[in-house]
Each structure stands twice: as structure tokens, then as C-alpha cells.
Amino acid sequence: MSIHIKNIKIQFFCIAILSVMAACKTNKSELIEPQKDISGTWQIAKIVQNGIDITPYADYSAFSITFNKDNTYSLSGELPFIVNSGGTWNFNDPQYPFSMLFRPTDGNAISSKLAFPIVGSKYQLGISFIKGCPGNYQNTYQYTFKLADK
Image 1 (cartoon, rainbow, N blue to C red):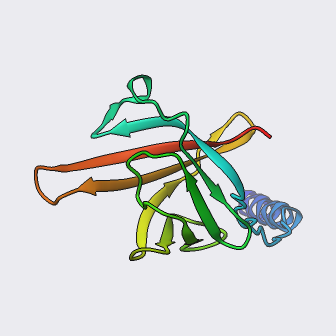
Image 2: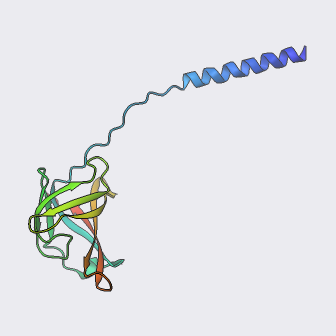
Image 3: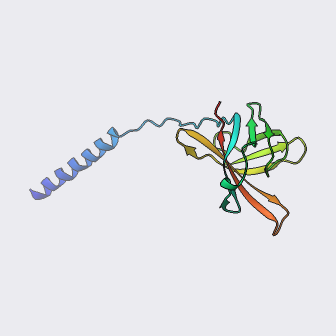
């Protein structure tokens, strides 16, 4: 008699598990990340040089970069930057960008690592690069940009 009761309990348990599994079907929908739209004029929010935050010591107020929807860009003001003139740009992947390629009109294409931190409800754009001669005379930079208020 106890073997019969054990079999019934095991069968009931298996049916209960199968019922729960069948009830927990999830609808798998494709989650598609929208393409990043960075069009607009971006101003510097922070500058890190060789790992040191130099924002309070640098006058960067006149420097900005404008990205257009046709994948062109222009620079305003002067600061050490990955490129020295306007040109075209593109992401390595429009939906999940990890780097950005700059093609200045007066030089060779240069790639930069990207960061898109979210501050409040807005994106900030981080661009990393190295300037200077190889060896002891190189400086690493991390510029963090914010979209200029219109």
C-alpha cells in the first residue's frame, strides 16, 4: 500500500512540475537596439590626460565637435584632439558601437574607442586617443562630451 501511495505522490509531483513549466512559456520577442544618433554639437564635459582629470585646469570652452546626420563632422576651437580637421565619421557597428572611425579631409583615418555613459536622461560621449610621438612623449586622452543645449 505504501509503495502505491509513493507512486501516486511521484506522479502527482511530476504532473505538477510539467504544469508549471508549461504555464511559464515566455514570448521571445526580438529586442532591437536602436541606432545611436549623435547628430548635434557636442561640448567637452571632462578631460583626462594620462589618467589625471585636468578639467579644472584647461580652457576648453571654445572647443566643440558637430556630428551631422550625413556622417560628416566639423571642429570648432583648438585642443589636442584625435583629428585636426573636419571630415567623415562612422561607427564600427551602428547599433552597438564600441569604436568610431574619423576620416579627416586632410589626413588618414583614425579609430577611437567609445563610451556612452548615461547621465540623468542624456547620453555622454567618451572618446579615447593618444597624441604625440611614440615612446616617452605620448599623452593619452579621454574626452567626455555632452550634447550642447539648444
